[in-house]
Image (tube, rainbow, N blue to C red; front, top):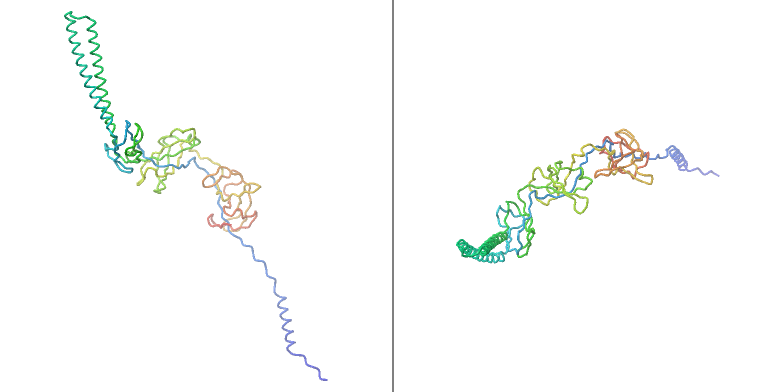
Amino acid sequence: MTPTPKPFLCSTCAVLAATAGALVGCQEAPKDPAPLVRSVRYVVVQKTEETGARTFSGALQAGNQSQLSFQVSGRIRSLPVKTGRRVTKGQLIASLDPTDFELQLREAKANLAQARAQANNADANYQRVRRLYETRNTSRQELDAARTSRDTARSAQVAAQETVQRIKRQLEYTTLEAPAAGRVNDVMAEVNEVVTAGKPVVVLQAGQELEATIDVPESFVRLTSIGDKARVMIGALNSAVEGVVQEIGVSQGGTGVFPVTIKLDVDPANARPGMVAEVTLTPKKDLTPVTDGFKVPLTAIGEDRDGRFVFRVEGEPGGEGKVVRQAIETGRLTANGIYVTEGISEGQRIVTAGVSRIQDGLTVRVPESESRGEAL
């Protein structure tokens, strides 16, 4: 029997299979990717020195502002001025109905005429009695009675004359005129309204000078004196002007808040009473710098059950470094940071972003400047 020949294809497959196995055996296992090192955002700790300057919210008001009112009571007959209008000195502001005063004046004049007539009669009678007494035709008692009647009549005439003058003045008071040129800031009454003497009717701003008024707590007002420098920022105009403390008022109702008035060195263009103003006061009594530690951003502070902490960056800018947890003690909180009183020193780099996602000992890249780091 002739033997069956082996297929050539099978030997070829064997060779290929062996070669593939050898190649597979030579390949190395894949390596783990290198960990990503990210840059960190930080701030360099520096000494913090600042004066006791504080900023308070307030408003502008007219420097020479007057509340105009009538000196007598009555019903308003006319009120020709409007809020915001300019007035000249002597211009009519408002007037009352004068009818009652005109009636009183006529009555007073009639009483004066009667008193004058009685005084003339009493004087004539006294002259007659005096001549009789000189010729010894009347007694001393009658002369004294005639003199008393004359003096009483003269006093009544003087009183009647003063009543006429008083009512004339009251009649003049029924018209209210501008004491100086200025602008009407507010109209506080209406036509036909009955007002009492002294009740404000119109608020008049005389001149162009403006002031800023703020409320200052007692803890700060004790450091403030008249003449202290101030800086007034007017938000609506986006401009700032200098000023000085002109007046320190009295606390009302035991609130512990004191009104303080700042006189502006110049009046900004388009500034109006009532605009909001931010006033920064720098007391002369507190010019010595106060050091409370090192001020850092609030975002640099972390806190857990072990207390508050920061992360220091160890390493030179431009290379790699690591972050180290550092326990701290904090102090005064300000509008742009918080003071760290213990735990850090000048020149250290403190992480300012992503503190909650950082672990102690993490490797990071330290950028050349504070602003180039990433928020981890």
